[in-house]
Every structure is written in C-alpha cells, then in structure tokens.
Amino acid sequence: MSSVLARTDRLLLANAIMGQFLTGVATRIFIISLPTLASALNTDILAISWAVIVYQLAGISLSVVFGRLGDIHGRHVIYGLGFAIMAASSLLCGLAANATHLILFRFLQGLGAAMISSATRVLAMEAMPEGSEGRANGYMTMGFHSGLLIGPPFGGFVIDLLSWRWIFFLLVPMGLVGVILTVLRAEGRRTISNGRAPSIDYLGAALLIALTIMLTLLLDRRSAATIGAERIGVLALVFGATALGFLAHERRSVNPVVNLSLFKIRMFTFSILSLLLIATTTSVLGFLMPFYIQDVLHFSPIGLATVSGQLTDRIGPRAPASIGVLATLGAFAIGGFLRTDSHWMLPASMMALVGVGSGFFNTPNQAAIIGSVPREYRGFATGMVQTIFGISALLGISLGGALLTLAFRYYSGVDDATPSAVHPGAFVASMKLTYVACLVLMVVALPASFMRGGTKIEAASSSG
Image (cartoon, rainbow, N blue to C red; front, side, top):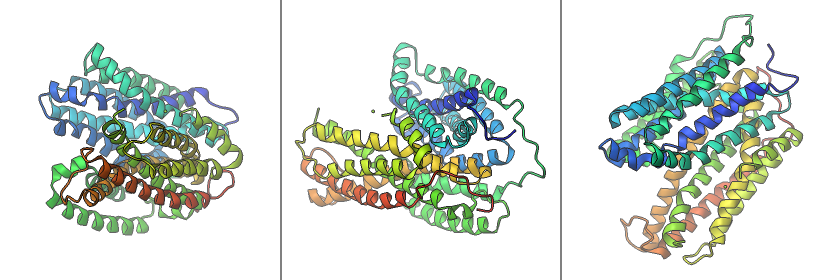
C-alpha cells in the first residue's frame, strides 16, 4: 500500500497524536514527584535523579537507531512494540520496591518512548495526503506539548489524591490502547518488497549509542557530578576518538545507520542547524528565567503549531520558521535590558516571545527535516529530531550554567563564587551577558533558517 493517501487516515493520525501525547506526559509527570519518590524509597534526590537521567539517555541514544530500524522493517512494528514496552515498564515503575529498580524500569520506559517518538511523526505524515507535511507536524507538536503541559499538574493531583505509584499505573491503559490501535492500522499495510531488506549497520548503531551516551554524561551536570571531574577529561577524549571512528566507519558502510550523504540536502542540513541553535538557546532561557523571577524579583502557545503548519504547506518552511527565530531573537534582545527591579512585564514578554517563536518554528522546521529526505529515511530523520532536541536541552543547561558561573565570578569579584541571588546585581549582570551570548547564536540561526530554501517541502530522491 502506498504511503501517499488521497484523504486523511483519521484513525492512524489519532494514534500518532496519542503517541506524542503519551511521551509528553511520561517526560514531565515524573519530575514533580522526585522529592516524594526520594522519601518513599529511602534515598536522596541525587540518586533518584538518575531515574530522570536514564530516561533521557534512552531517548537521546536510541531514537535514531529505532528510526532507521523502522525505515527498514516497518514503522508499525517499532511503534506498536514501543507502546507495549511503555505499558509494561510503567506498570513495573509503579511496583518498584527501591531506587535501583525504579532506575532500571525508567530506562525501559525511555526505551519505549524512543521507539514511539522515532515513528510517530512519520506515521502522521503518512496518514495525510501529499503536501500536508506541515499540518501533520503541527498536530504532532500540539500532541507532545499538550502532554508536557498536562504532565506536572496531573502528576501533582494524582500524588495528592492517591500515591506516587499511580502516576505510572495510569500510563498503562494509554499504552495498551496504543498497541491495539497500532495493530488495527497495521492490518493490510504490509508492503511487499521486491528485494532483500537492507542489512543493519550494527557496529554503526553501537558506536552511535555509545557516542550519545557519552555526550549526555558530559553535558548533564548531575552525571558530571557523579562521575567526578578527574574522569570527565578522560571521557571527553574517549568521546572524540569514538566520534572519529564512527565517521570513518559510516563513510565505508554500505547501509550506514547515519547516511552522511543526506547532509548534502540543503533543507535538511540547515533545518538541523537551526533546530540545534534555537533549542539550545531556549533551554538556556528556561533554565535561568525561574531563578530571576523567583529569587530576584520575588514576585504558555500551542495553537500556533497548527497555524504555522498550514502556512508551511502553502508557502514552504522558510518564512514561518524564520518568524519563529526572529521572535526568539527578540526575547533575548529584551533580556539585555533586565535589572534587579525590572517590571514583571519584561520577563513575561521574553517568555511570551519564546512561546510564539516555538509555535512558529518547531512545526515547519520538523516538517522540513523529515519531509526533505528520501522517504526510506524518514524514520532516521525523525530520530534525528528527537536526538537533537535532547542534546540541545542538555547543552543549553550546561552552556547557561557555565557562562553564568564565569560571569558571576567576574562581576562579584569572588574566584570560586556560585551564582546566587544573594548578590542580585552580579547575578542579573551575569544573566544579561548569558542572554547576549544566546542573542549571538540567534543571529547565526536566522541566516541558517533562510538558507534552507523557500520552496515547498519535497522528498529528495534516493540517490541523495
């Protein structure tokens, strides 16, 4: 059966949206329960934070691999199995007797989430007619961010009403429904291949997983604190050597897990670069702004995703994505004017502009990344989106923390000072400098967004 439909497959689209919603909820519902879990399982917050880290590790390291496996063996298999693993691991998380068990089961949950995320956007695009890539990705953005928004308050409500275990138990029926819907939509969708399926680059997949795990450990502050400063340097050297070996292997491989020739596609490459820059800088903002609002001053835009999706289908991704970059750039420009006594409207305006920017940017940019590659590589491209988002979030926190610390030590005059609102003048000055650095990155992201091309999204030929 062709992946190009004359009309929308509503059941498949609904299943894809549910997958995005479930992964969004699973990502955030756990965060609010960390103190409760640490107390209930007789451990400390640092140990329980590894339940967050391993979930991130699974998603970042395995999304590309599962995406490529879906390209080769069929996305419905990977998608349905992801729902099954999510349901089973959520049940096990709710039954966990200690922190070690919870960490193991959260890794399995992250594994299921990676399998779902690697296929959901492609399935949404396959559920809709040709030329609807923007709208399909708009629905996916809405689904995921709805889950992110609902997760924390829903988790808090469940903990107060029942117990922490039920934040996991309640994810089980959603996973089971996903399995059933996937099986129903897989009926009659098996394609008959005219030749043998491409072989899997197992060595390349293993090297890629190792690289992303090492990069996550290098960027995540909690991981770095656990590993120790003396081992971080060694890990960085191992990462560099592994990266070189991975690139050399992928160039020689007949069926590489990361087809480097895809980066010759201008729309794909510049969309990836734009995503990396804007996701990193918005992560910096999300990391620093709560400290400013709560400790110094003492005192959200899902609907835009569908609008930008429809605009993308009509005029291409360049204009709406670039509007998103400009809005985010404006947010960081405002950040340069913050003071210790700023009116609440200034930080509120920054957050609003970032929200508008995300609403306009994410949908067309993801549609450009996935829609511009050959159809047989769309799972790989979807996995790249998930991996870049995860790495950017960690990179933003790491970069923001490092810049803030260096600037704070300069402005406070204390060589080993830790950024704190105890010295509000130095803290705000350091934060402004960090935002200026983000502004520079946005200035780079803007031409990158324009250089992706302004035509409608078209899949490249298999020859690249």
